[in-house]
Length: 238
Image (cartoon, rainbow, N blue to C red; front, side, top):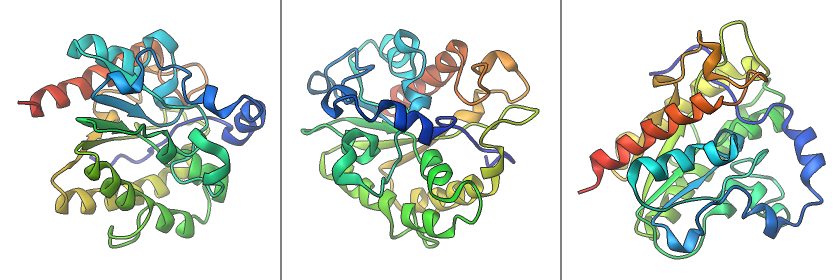
């Protein structure tokens, strides 16, 4: 399910970070969270792909489809493994994970890491820091261990394609393909890592699935993603 142009997260991630960095990080952690994390057994983490569309975001669609609380602690502009993890709080996706036990942790991430650290160019070091060539070392395998320790399954949502005609993340296509291949290797060994491909429901040739910025999902795009992820959880939940 690897497509030629994986992409997205936040267009102009660093500009967005400069705009938002003065907002207290404790407040950032709660933005978009219609359900308190401690009340939910399903928690959505990630960047602006998850946070986009407010009351019509991916998590809110999942909550309605599943009929149970879904916490949303995603933050626009967040990197999966920020180099300043201890300083940026929930701008590092790993730090968004609330305490306590969970049934499901749903996450997407990595696009802002690639765009911010290597400008979608020579990204070997950044990719290896996320998940190594053997898919045994890196921030993503370590995070899976942390989620496993919370008693949860990790549902990783792969990015969808850049729309036909291009978009801000089109230059990262090769890096996203490598990231996906390494995630495949990790999932082949780890039963509690479930991979979902948002590209299965987001049609790169349909502008109605994209925000006008050609990066984020439209409300319809968020609905399609949320329904897709909810279906996977429902199918795997006894």
